[in-house]
Figure 1 (spheres, helix red, strand yellow):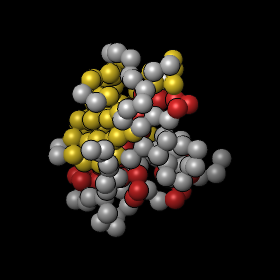
Figure 2 (cartoon, rainbow, N blue to C red):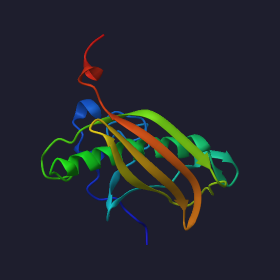
Figure 3 (cartoon, rainbow, N blue to C red):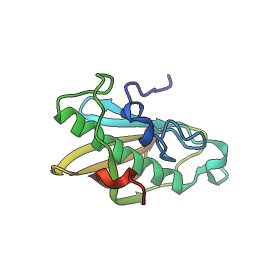
Length: 161
């Protein structure tokens, strides 16, 4: 049974904010990572494409790093949206986050040709700064751990330079 993400926070981002290479739904060349709640944790599932290979049989580490990054910012948006009394799909625009810090530890090679799953645990460390601990699995095998410090996106990000 293939896992699917429903009620992804990225589906709620307004068009101006939906272009991220990792999770932007409007970026035709992007990965389209989608993050939602699974109980009290967050989840993103993804099947790497053939071109995401490092060596035959293994996923390129940059894909794992990108997955951890977007999962962390999406998880932070989910958590703050919930703290504000909302859930994806309720018609209220969620907050957006940017990456303040990204750390990834590769524990073992990630096999190619299988679905990978990021699972996040979110912790508020400041009203505008959240920490997400992420574990990346291929089937039941833990392949990577990451930590994302996500910061509420400043209003100036879309203003012309």
